Length: 116
Length: 104
Image (tube, rainbow over all chains, first blue to last red; front, side):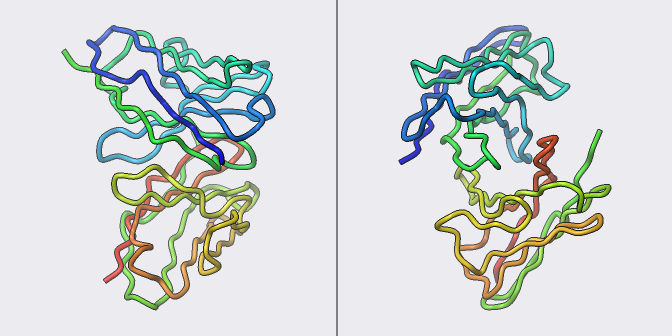
């Protein structure tokens, strides 16, 4: 059974940093791209970033380029999202998702709140 | 930047057919996915590559994509289908704004 479990969310001040983690199980992790998707309170879904199975390709949505860094540790079956220079508009539930022909499995999400 | 437009809300009576549209420039040239998100839950994939259903998704969910419009169709809509639905283009990962489906 595919499982994705996010962690690391919390309350952070504007300009601060946070590192999200996503632990994967139930599939050959290194064979898949992985994505982060966020959802601001009461709003729609926004794709944030993804990373190829071997880490050789990475893409970001324009609004987080230069502030967020996606990475992965295949032996640990984990993908990460390092978020720096956080802004109020980054407040959202952050989901990790397996990225194959679609985002076919999603985690339960972790809430990031950016506020002073 | 590329944009996908969905109606904010659609209403349907139980047992009837619901259609949710997603429009974008030359959308028919792209692969489209559809996701269902019930209140308080994570999104669930219901359609990928325009019209394919993942295992476990009921046959009443179908979809098409042509021209500038993709359409998700739910036949024999049930109360459990009440949710937000999002389209997404696969190449650039853009999501539509979402459609709230009400079954009443």
